[in-house]
Image (cartoon, rainbow, N blue to C red):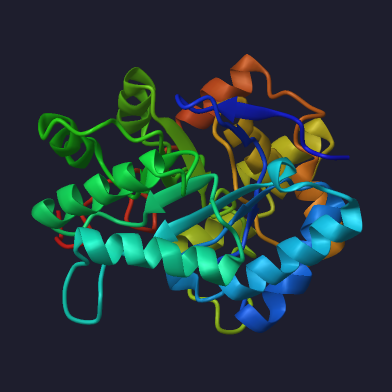
Length: 304
């Protein structure tokens, strides 16, 4: 069944609560994965310039939409600016060119959400964000936002007199809850979008060639027979993945699970059929371990 639930951005655009992530799916494989995800009911596809699979995503969108009888407006598409060239940060002009190139690879005239993928350098952030504002005004994106930005990065945009981002895509799961950042985003009307929701699973990114920043302690915790997420999933009669995704959705975060297995695709989409009770939500609050395994709340150009 199609995912009809979503969170509305300040532009009025609604992001489906469960989207399909394409990170680490090669370009030659991603078309089939996207096509299958649309058949399973996903209506949000997330990619990025740096994933090097936008062309395949575009092909999968065309095939899947044709197969499912969907119109362009039925599917929410997110892609992201990689803010660096090989030698330096991109200028505003290069940022706009990157968006045009992404649109060309995707075969689209407009994306639903365009994000700056990471925060690299203050002056460059301001120039790149100004370029995204121009892209929004020009109709090339229905909404614009950032990814891996902390509150200080966003404050810089606001202090420069620039519009507030519509969304911030960040690592969010029970081990990395970022309560202060999430509170800040909600106060500013910026929608938190969660990536890496399934980090606590012992199987997270264990396929050959899939890098993982998880510590050995994290892996061991996930493999324990008494892992809290295994026990909680059993309590609610769902898989661990469904439970972790359900936790994100219950907090109001659109989530972006990735799987090329059609059965798991459908399972990951079915996270609205149960609700975690208040006591368990409070318990999970005590499992927070800080910034997470990706960039989290730090500037990726620094160690702080």
